[in-house]
Image 1 (cartoon, chains in turn purple, orange):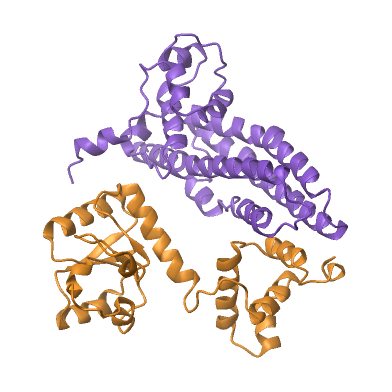
Image 2 (image 1 turned 120 degrees about the vertical axis):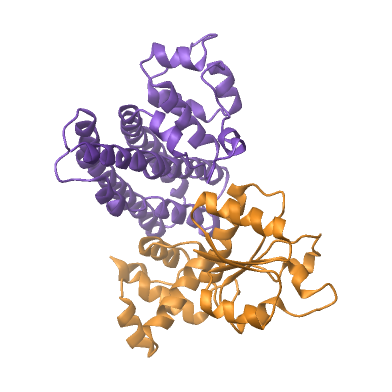
Amino acid sequence: MKKSKISEWENRIFSPEMKMAELIDLNYRLLTVLSRTGIGLGFGESSVAEACRANGMDVNTFILICTMYSLPEYVPDRKILSDADPAAIVEYLHNSHSFYIRYGFMKLDKSMKSLVGPCPEHQKKVILKFLSDYRQEVEKHFEYEETTLFPYVRAMIDGSDGGTYTISEFREHHDNIEEKLEDLKNLIMKYLPESCSGETAGMVLLDLFSLAEDLNIHTAIENNVLVPVMSMMENKRKARI
Amino acid sequence: MKVLLIMPSKVMAKGMEGILNDLGEFSVEGCLSELSMHGELMFKNIRADIIILDPVIFGHSSRLSVKQYFSRFTDAALVAFPSYCLEEDSMEQYDSVINVYDSPASIVRKLRKALKSTAATPHQDGKELTSREKEILVCVAKGMLNKEIADKFNISIHTVITHRKNISGKTGIKSIAGLTVYALLNNLLDPESVE
């Protein structure tokens, strides 16, 4: 079927020519993306393309990631994907992992501890155990990607055949880490004893919602960007042999 | 996911088919312009997961229950895509309502939600857990397997699974670890029993 002009244009909310400051103004949550791509603040009047170039970031990939964060349910088409740089995608995912571990979960841990402080001892214990079990699970999940998936992608970029591993193996292996965070959201929002709820609970929930949203987009980038980009690369490689 | 369209307007049917085909997640398996004997056969053959229909097919005067009508042939999710302004109370008969101005993304969101709502709450829509659900929740929290729970209450595994779906649907909590926390926060469980 012929692709319509409308659908080609409807997801273009950012362009390389616009100013970086305008991009952040359109969606301030992209500040987290900035910090993970190595583009610092103080970009003055630079355009998105200029700021990316100055920091060694591929501009198409940058815009793709920003669009993923700004349009929920956005699924990029082949044309957009073939313009993206797999090395930049992996670098971004890797930086996100360390952001979650060093900052996201650290913060959540701290605020959860103060939140359940007034709860009865046995309830406090079970909530904190739920959180620490979950953190371990997430760290294991990240570790698999760091030690198996990312090295594979980097090897493929360098032109090696990547061994016996393929991206479809990752797709099957890729379990859902957002589910328990959803559970935690509901537990705090709906079932926390009255003695615990208050202003802190609202703040913790805000953190939880934004962390869950961030992780959802992170997973979407893996499934809807990295996986198709790599299977395109695998197919091209196969065709050459 | 298989979709069946029932709407007299070709413009609406073609438009919906085009949007769903572009996205790929839902495929339109058939399109009827009206309800008829021929159509009833099609329901059975297609086994659609979702039926998207223009309520105009029932006529404005008929007060027929949409759910009841379709439940004879299918347990598909029912989604309205009205060509006219639908009254508030007739909207409640559907799992979701699509507006002609909805974007493709929100149509997909509504279809997914409609699917989920039919899967999660097949027979009941109570809000609090029933006492049987609480009993089963406690077993799940203690780490019992579906088979063990079925034996204990002398019910089928299928029934246990339905109960568990309903528990997760009502509480919004899916993981066993989360359900354990829920049980403890609601004092359904003795803290000593889950060490």
